Length: 488
Image (cartoon, rainbow, N blue to C red; front, top):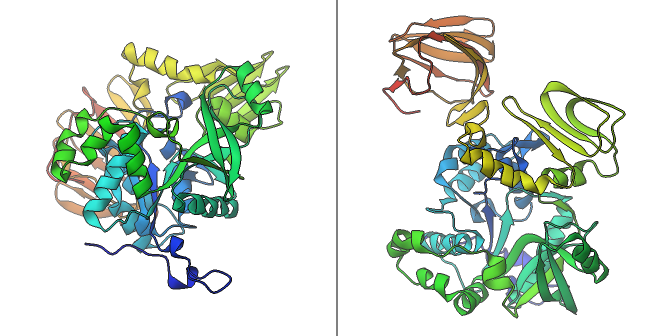
């Protein structure tokens, strides 16, 4: 049994020299990182959703979440809940994160929990508790904070202050929701009305889910808050409220660990909002005094990034006689002429055009094109693998051109192809290659030829990502033309 990271004794003494027993607990952080992010398509794809896409300063939203949490939580107390389909993406995102120690990275990777089936937030939280209890001691008073992985929250010092205010309420037996003061009447958000003040926060009056624009305007006048989807509670309070208000879910928690896993597919799907928060009398709100957005849609992306700007672009764009437009394009020059209220998002294989204010409907669009059988919902031209990534640059009859990125200290499997030969040109970094059992190194501006039917592999021995331009030539170029002799 592992020992929990209890709060140091020096932090338990208040200003009068008295021992504060309410702080004698472990604080756990749960990161929910299994969402698909369909409303941010085509940037977000099923196999590489928005929480893993580079967003700011070379970091993804998931990486920004980790760095923010490390300001107030021990790495060993931070758990990520996701799908096994994102296993290697999670590993890579953590291992490539700069500014944290190897010990912290090891702890974060060890604490990734893979939910057998997606069941929404309430079963995901219960799943986390059950898994954590298998490996360490968890008391009734220990605190759990729940964070989505796709939020932008600034600055960190104010975020930490909000966590401390929530701790006081949660230690008093409340289930705390974080509320953001609205800046405009957003239809797609949940709203929270409060009544009396309580220990640095407020008692929740009621929740209002995704109101119309007119109703949202009324709620703003009544002082309602946006629901930020971040929660804090102690274990005992959460389980008691789960048992009382969602007994059909709680009963699975009472099973043995093996029985719990075996039967998790039968757990009813529900959110913590519907399953507990909208029913309990224990709900309290802490005002989230930070700059916040959930990046749930292109409109929310703009509200955060381009507030007060007329035309705005990420990448190359030009606007002529256009008003209130947005372009996201890292590949092409996009020019808008005579347009108003248009969002244009360009990716290598897809182009999205949507009217501002309607981007929540992108989720419906993704469902539509998925039903039609397009692969554009799952992957883009860039596909991520345990060892790195590849991007299809061009493809025509008889040949295909890729950029291959190999992460530091990573190796591709020993493999061969039946139908194609490969020509590798190193354009950045250095690699060690094996072709037909012959080992050699290749650096920038050097090339290697791999005949079809010959065993080969690539290893990056350096501490920076190596890049190769690969030209495949053959009468069949499918990704399934591969025979592996070793794993990655």
